[in-house]
Length: 356
Image (cartoon, one colour):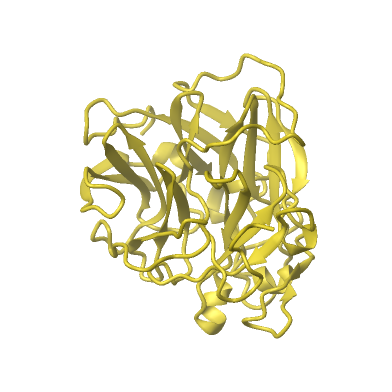
């Protein structure tokens, strides 16, 4: 079991943006991959042929793990007659050759949270069968205190149905799962976080800043909030900061640290499945709760896509950019991923992306 993660409506957890500096060794169940020359962290990379979207990448030992939302089973956003395809995970020794490791949990399995339906309901009902709102933003984080893996994601229809926060946090038995209460094992559990400041339904990331965890979230009015998490990374503790950058047109937040300065990137404007949206950024020299100072954009078109998350890979930062399929198709199975290097030339500034 994940300590302090109870299978109740009050239990909470956090998920991750692109987490910088995840601690922990390779779990014994996951063998380290052989050393293979891969893509250098300062070179942009296009990943095609993977049905994984709005996700993130971790590196554990010598293996990269990519997490993303699947579409190939037929899911279409805002189409409740379609199916939720689940969250996939892929592994690679070099960020070039990827192996599909299956789903993090069974998308047709049971969501044991009883806040909407006594005894819970299926994940299909939670994620798509009511209003077609989907489940998105898989964020896989490793709690620094004990190395337990936690999968966070959001189910926006929870907020639409009863006003509950959209987030779920599933305890996982390894970096490839399985996750959730049906997984069993030492850490499998399904948890509905208890949030106070990030209580809405939008995109989010989980940030590990020196062993303390925070969630940065998009609110229903498209502003950004930040809430500290408890010592187990499972509940919000209230407080935090609201309307971080003073805008109501942003989404897809992610945070990284460079020296004594924290940087927040986000999609601007917010727009579902839009191509060529801007990427804005702000910085804080006073920790996660700011104040945050908006600077401008690091790209006007995000390389033709939309920024999503940040990952620390091979001593460098990369921004995940979803290259959404043309014409805002509600089924995005064929959309590719761009990994764009992020550089900080001087404190308080982020270099413009290598693309428009």
